[in-house]
Image 1 (tube, rainbow over the protein chains, first blue to last red):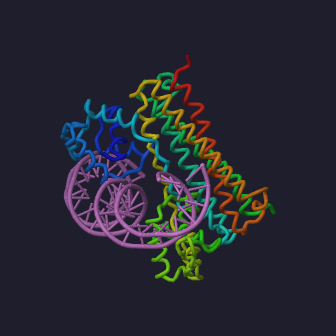
Image 2 (image 1 turned 180 degrees about the vertical axis):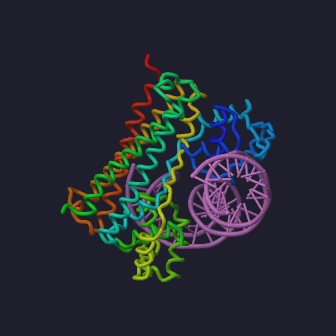
Image 3 (image 1 turned 90 degrees about the vertical axis):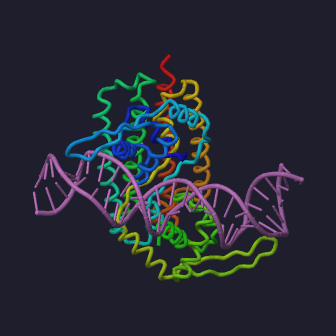
Length: 180
Length: 180
DNA sequence: TGGTTCATGTAAGGGGTTACATGATTCG
DNA sequence: CGAATCATGTAACCCCTTACATGAACCA
């Protein structure tokens, strides 16, 4: 069982989902393509950590609604408590470009920074919209055991980090361009 | 040529390095093991993007000092300008655990958060120490084309993000434990 | 005397992306 | 009328980690 398997189980604790849904929801804390998720779900089903119900649809392809089993929940709980804390992994091409920024002209460097800024702002707005949609008002904050609680924390974290990254760019850009 | 290849080239722009050095320095913006780096350096050498000088040592193993060529620098510059901006990739087991935090007791959740806090604080201190060591005073800030400049920007970014992550934990921890 | 640093490499295997495959419906 | 959405799956391939391999010097 790899890390992504536990990520899938942790989503299924909240509610039953199809592989298609999981692929989209997962991006809050892990990136994975459907081609990786479908085989993993099949494996989890073989291992009795999930079951699925086939739902026939007209006009759309049939779908499989996966539900976590008690065995699956136990496995997830065990992993949360026992898995050793690992280093976090970040891979970002932009950072390499920043490292070698002296190699290009100031105009080109500025363009790079502006494009990054725009992409981050767009992502921030999308996330803030998503969060408001799912966590209207401050309801979930108070309930620790609410199934919304963990997701709410993660939205707040991502948004905070995006804002920090934007304020870093705001600080760095004039240095790149020069004070004149 | 994959992304890591350009990461290696961007380090070699600053100064000639051995594979061993690159492995350690790289962690500022990319994680990679020596077993991935050595074969890539051999490939870059075949492609004439780097050359190496064999340096015999006594008491220690011999080493290969790699230097970037003009072709290598041109390739890197081209990549910086032409490579399309990609989404950033973050993978962090802790986030999965946060998502499913309702599954464990408050005491266990608190332990998880405290361990995370300690790990982040340690990493922050290590980074701040490293930065002070390499960028004493504010010298590199003013010089855009300084070979130190890019690295200085990345240290500031990492440190800012770590602080933001710590302040998120500080906000989240009392919510997890409860207001009582 | 046992762990860390220096220093380079190979081999096996798991993790992850890209591309191939299918097909009706809905939206601009 | 083409693009996106819904919905699942397989195959090929690259990226990356873990483990194997070697060996002297230095430090606790």
